[in-house]
Length: 320
Image (cartoon, rainbow, N blue to C red; front, top):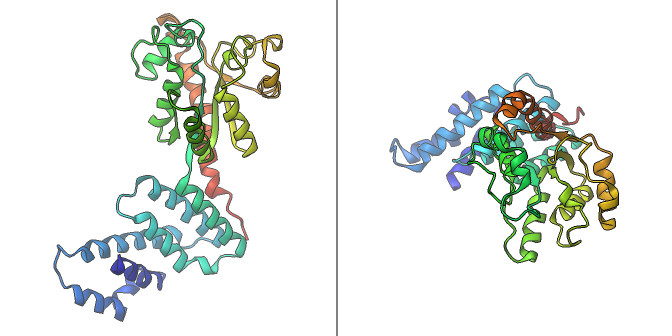
């Protein structure tokens, strides 16, 4: 680790990678370690040189705003895929080479977004397992063939779980997004709430599969994890995206006469929103008819809005 930091500091003194080759400290360091390929120093030197070259090619000819944008954009790529600490090498080199030339607002933005990139998930998926039918969940029947074909899942008709939520999660994962999906709450409620709250805070976008069962006075007021999650997402000013799962929006939305009064503010928010919904695929013929429409809606707005929230992390860098 000591030699790695030394290498980063050396490469950080220069704007181009080639300049390092004549640095006295660098030459002494290379001489001290010789040509032994088994020495970890050799791999460290190669990695730092590669990251340095990428930075040189990616950030040259950019304004300070452009440097902040591209530094953050590439940093998030390293964070999502790094296995050799390239993310931290990139971050340290950016601070050594360019940070001091940026304005204070740009520096503050860079620091804040780096922390977000390092710790955030793309989305948090909120859904309910409530089901008065017992064996088999009606939501699975309504979206039966979408769940099987788009989600690559077994026939869900007899499953008591919310397999539509699993399908949505799989779709987003397949499109390279990272999110939190908690399919079971079968543990101590305090532990559940703590885990959900923690993961929600780490997420950029709050996605909620809206079902009438969330609001219905047929169920006890508590626990209602979906309401708790919505309340936290609102308090933290999350980007909120809701998907109506019970049928056609909003013809099939539960009427307010049957909504628990404690949930009225949440219900009013949902009722006033423009929710996305998926067409039914209870039969193969319905799937054939609605497949393209459902795929398009999953891509836009669902996938697109999450991608836009992530992209905004670097695109919104201040210009001065």
